[in-house]
Image 1 (cartoon, helix red, strand yellow):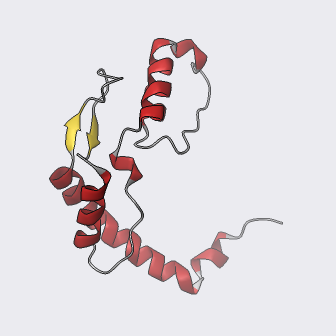
Image 2 (cartoon, helix red, strand yellow; image 1 turned 60 degrees about the vertical axis):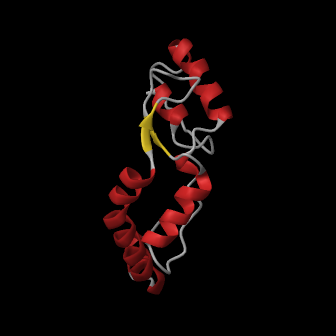
Length: 117
């Protein structure tokens, strides 16, 4: 069965999702610059990421900025210890990912993908 993007585009839910996505994009810059700092995670001092002081503060800010819209928990605003450890491993051993495709799933903040790039 082939994927039919025109059917997705005509979905009654697509318009609502586009509205949420547009609102998020408009406010994302303010959320990131106002509630995170550009810092280096402890295990990867050569990387700099926009990270929040704590996830609850960033989450509350995201909900306030987007008002009544439901927003996902901002797991991206934390450099989780497991992600830092894997990123450190890849930074120290770039040959493990050189020339390969890497999928970063669930390590928070994209730190593993950044280290693999």
